[in-house]
Structure formats: C-alpha cells, structure tokens
Length: 409
Image (cartoon, rainbow, N blue to C red; front, side, top):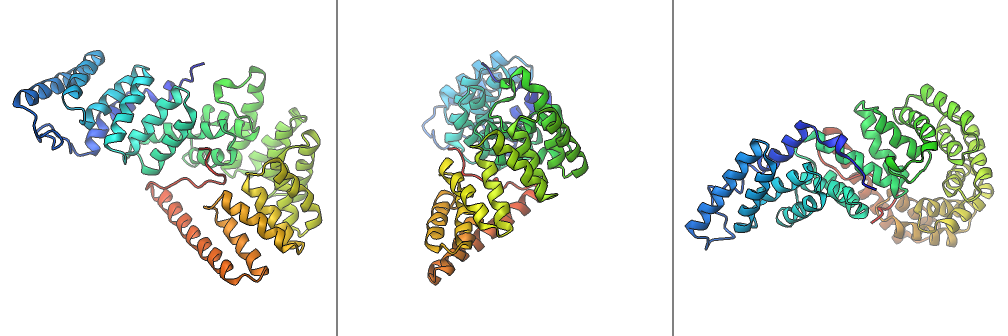
C-alpha cells in the first residue's frame, strides 16, 4: 500500500522553494563561475561541457520540462559528481514525479556532501516515508527539524506532520501529541490534523490511510477532543470527551484519554476513568502508570505500589514506570529497591531531568552524598538545556524535540 503525502506537499509554492531554495540558502557557494576545488584537473573541455549541461538543465527546469532537466543535470553530475545543487535539483524533480527511490538516492548523495542542511534531511525523510522505510524516515525527519528549514514554512509543516504520524505508528503517542500540538498553536485545526489527534487519543498505531472504515467516525470525534485538549479549550474538550465516552463506552482508550484530560481538572473523576480503563483492558500499562503517579501525589504509597510494579513488569523499558515505582518505594522506606529502579530509569532515559532529580533524592536518602550531588548537577544542566531549547522554539530558531520517551531508533 502506497502512503500518499502529495496532497500536503505538491503546491507550486513548495515546489518552487524546493527547486530554488537550497541554492539560494547556500548563497551559490558552489557557483559554476568558481571551478570546484575537488576537481583541479578538470580540462577546459570538461568545464565547458559541465556549464552547457547545467544551462540546459536550468532552462528545461524553468520551462517545466522536467524529463529534459533530469537528463541534463545527470549529465552535469556525471562530469562533476560533487556538485551539491545538482543533487538537490534531481531529488526535488524526482520527488515531484513520485519517483521516491530515485529522489531518496539523490538526497542521500547530497547529505554525503553537505550533512548540515535541514531541508535536505527533511526531503530525505519524506522520501523514506514514501518508500515505507519508516525507521530511517523518523530519524531523518527529526534531524531536519533539529537543523531547521531555512525559513521554508511549507516544508517545515509537511515534515512536522509526517514526523507526528510516524511517532503514532511507533506507539510513541506522547511525543506525537507534543509535535502535533505545534499545529494547534499555529491555528491549524484541519481535518488531517484532527485525524492524527484522534489516533493519539485512541492510541491506534496506524497511519491515516490504515484506519479501518468502522473506526473513522470514532477517530474524528476523538480528534476533536484531542485538538481542544491541546489548545487548552477546557470546556470544549470536556464536551467532546463526554460525547466520545457516551458513544464508545467499551473502548478502554476512550476512558484512558478522558482520564488523562481530567487529571488536571478533577482527579477523582480521572481515577474513576482510569479504573474503567483497567476493567476493560486489565493490561493497560499507561493507565497503571497514570494511576500510580496520582496515588504517589496523594502519598497513598500502598495503593500505588502494585500498579507501579505491574507497569514495570509489562513494559520494563518504559522509564516513566521505573520513575514512579522508584519514588513509591522511596515513600515506603525501601531505599535500596528505590535506588535500583531509579538507576535503571536513568539508564533508559539519560536525557530526562525528572529521572536524575528522582535518583538524586534516592541517593540522598541512602546517604550517598557524592552520587546525589552528581545527579543534581546533571539535572541542573538538563533543565538549562531544556529551557534554552524552549526559548529557541519560541523565537523560531531550530531546536531539538522535547520527548517524554526514548526515540524508537
């Protein structure tokens, strides 16, 4: 099954940006007027042939004769294979023609020459998405997001959307929620965004075109609730969740999402919904973790302990479960066990400030002052980094994604 993204990214504005933007961003650093240093032995005949092929390619591209442009640019690259603009033009044209394997290879060649350009990584990720190489795609797309897109808002939006879809497919729903919330902040509540939020709320690890027909209405209704939740429109979100629960009372994830929403509104109601989740799906690990955290907050350690222990058994590599179990054990005075669980949590998520903070508290309780000081210092550095990334994101500068789970790669 081919996953189409063309509806999102074949506007004339985007294609113009793809075909022209890379060379502009590089300020024509590989200008044909300057003979490339990597080929000092090039003869005047080769230089003339290269210039002629590039001109033919430029003329054909400008006139929309893409097949001719591909032939001419390929001839130019045969003469001068380290010409970055040529690989960019080929990749963009192949992508426009739905030739994703060829486009992917062109962008990979370009990355080998110029590995620090966000737009190139973004386009490579989109090609890998189209060829269903999803694990490489999410890595490439996130690399592009971290490097930035040189002001190309359309490419940035397309990459953000597909990054969110892939995290949904990999069942990293919390990361997908954070990524797609960026659309809501920009006022984008389009049906495709609502659909993606619906998949998150229902914890369905599907791409949009994989959603079963009998689930589409539920997904869209859940998406309405999710978008309002992300936008912090509390009343609208509550109404949407209430409608969702009334129509689909036997879906465990409906109760789970409603419970998560209510945690900051009505914690007692949230616990009730999370309990319903476990009644419908006894092995629902995220519900166990949420309940354990709520009981921890209330210092009901004995209520939290079996939930946290079971959550770790079900998903031993999920660090939030290790976090809550370690903190519950600390509350019960089981310091040695707490340290062990929190050390494992730090190993699983070394970039999580919360894990280092919790481990510092456990070390302090255990009388391990030097270890506690080290963890507090790590926590401080990670918090500072997080603040810098948050401020950079607000100012529109590239910043790394803030994740609540380890990356799937």
